Image (tube, rainbow, N blue to C red; front, side):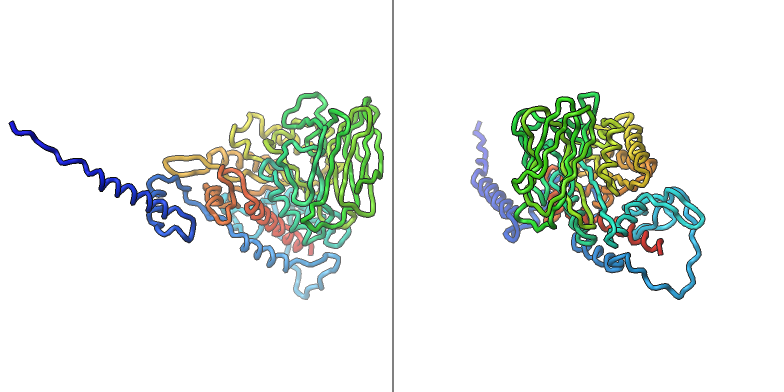
Length: 499
């Protein structure tokens, strides 16, 4: 029987085809302008890629900046000058119900749909037939008005998780508020940071020989962690915290320093230095009591230090750098790994006292990234409400704002979608904010909504990093500008109501 011969496998053409495919793919994925075969890149993305579900693109920073400039141009440079009286008859008062939202630009009237609401929701806390007697941010806006007239310093404290760990968001808010209203200093700093990567754009901080305890993992009954939520105590001789103005920044003169500490029966002394010269020595020995503050003034300084003396144990919670200018201060207090509920771990009386000492005009709480990983505790809403009501009871005029979580995604059927728990967290935090008399900023919607963190990552310059959770410096500048714009919309409306 004759043998059957099969034609040989075309090895050589296959090699040529594979080499051509590899070469073409390589050329397609070269960085611009060398990526000469974009259709191949598109093919790979369509077949193998994971895409973001349809949502709004990221806002452009130049557009937000332009909107800010236009809005600021309509504001009086100083409210010390009274606008000329109008010849027109005064408009009839508009009734406002308690709980109604301030009608900011961008919201559609007579709508309760989330997408139709303003990004910054400012509820009326006391409505009347003659208009709202008090909005959730009335105290803050009134403080800005007095600061504009150079009668008062306005203090904003921004608590957040890792989204502000490198002074992101907060540095932009500080820059814009101080450019508009005047600079009163960089604000509050921990004695020792929980994480080494914590950074401030204007001040470098170096500390040694301190051991920290925080509200994130409370271990002692006292739970006296101070204004920043971190207690530092000495573990050896030579404990030092040093703060220096960064050489690359131009900063208004610093002429005032505050040191927060606790008295203790075994307490020791600490020395305060300005430009390497001791200007004060403070003795902390006494009946145990947290929430103490030492205020020091001096002509001007660039290098500041708190140095432990010999003997005794020191317990310190923070340092404030300011000046006497009637402007704005923005504290950036990053608690990487933190959650909104962690504030309930502090001693309520101590917490209220430290806030009274610092006297902020606006408290901002920006948490949610960590909640999205593990879910919300059954008593999350109850405990968060309790601590907010506690500080509001001790400081009735205080304004507060909860910023909802930024976007976080998961993969579903070949595309990125926002994790469902993000929507749940937003819903719960919104309830907490309104129940406590606070404003609410919808961070997720401000970013662009569904799977927006992916679009922030794909944007040039990148607005988010590759973990699709954290933002870049450029992303922080954009988010800070978005929040500032919304706050200025509220301030503009407040001023018009006052006329």
